[in-house]
Length: 248
Length: 355
Image (spheres, chains in turn red, green):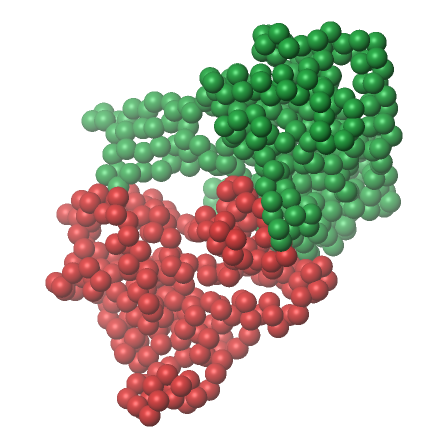
């Protein structure tokens, strides 16, 4: 029996779901190994008997809350995919604004038709078994997880900085070009795609840990003399959700 | 003593001859308008000798990637009814590395020794056997902050097939003094018939060039090269590790750009069919959080301070003791790569002041 797979979307651009369809060279092999039974981006049929559910998007509305609770109940294994599902992502920028003001800004006088909440990662609402962060998620990492699940071996995200992949790619460090890249504090797994093409890392895969963040605070202030507010603004792009209700 | 003299034109002709049968890697200049200075060099494959810039300052990365690639496949395996079968994979191809400064030559010697220590590493050695190394001497420190002279690595007497010494001054060197390091190097360079016998005037010019070179290298370490291992042994419990590591991201950049860092990780990759796969190795680094994580979940260097100390102990003491090669060649790539501006020399000098 092939594992039954579902791919769901909450508040997001659904780019992470699309990233699965973009696995063009592997798609046939993937369909040989698993059965996709519920996927809005890819099929009309819907089944709720699911082994592994992949969810992209943040929990940002009461409907999202109900949906993600249903996914959890129907899926033996639940995987958050992408920055929105794993961190809250860009959706969390609204958490730092007044709810009435952003609702009116987006929906005008129909704002009351669209109830909303603070944006949260899905792990804030239900138990999540695996996370594949990134904006979008890296579809090679998605394949690696699928293979680990099929083979029954442990899966772990890289526990090191984007700098590692950036150096392996032979790039010139963006600090040498005057850019305050967030690579040193950000979890790798993206093959340093942004620095490789000349854009600083924006930490879409989340931060590495307290030690690196404390070092960043020191270095940005004492070595690079950067305004702390500017660094925080960069960190908030994907990481404004703190879990404890605080607004960094 | 020089073995020969060759003109730049003849030399480039010999390189173009190599290009007919093998891959040629050398320093290639890249303009980087938003960097200061707005130019950098990288070891890259070239398709014509004219693309080489033998007057380069330094290459951002060392040439180690051509012997130990950042990622490589070691073997491929597939499942069989009674287990599995595997076959080794090697991508080794004849390669010439043209334009290696003395610091990187010393580093290649260290790698050679590390990968023949306790038996040959076949993947490394297969590349090494097919590699022709042509060094080029540097006449002055390539950039501020290097401490190659402190590490006795700004002059190289081994690790090359051919060593070139620019004669005359200025960017447009027209002639090179040549020393041969192997019969293979001699055979390649002499085959074109362009090598000349050095005259007494050539020898005098070469000696004068070496004297100017020696005078141009300052010293930045307060500890003499031969005293460094003992000084470091006394510094094991210093508080400087903790104080410096507060700024360390544990990003591993220092490891990955280091020409003598050779640690790697090995893992298996499976195809979706779960019937076939490959065993791969990738660069690793002792500064990374999980480097010393072992089965059962224990991490015997879980703190950045312990990892920082480990790296400098390796560079100044342990690699030398284990391989007999240089653990550090003073190229300062680690210092340049560190976005926390942690300076190796500064740490050595602070420790020396303390003990």
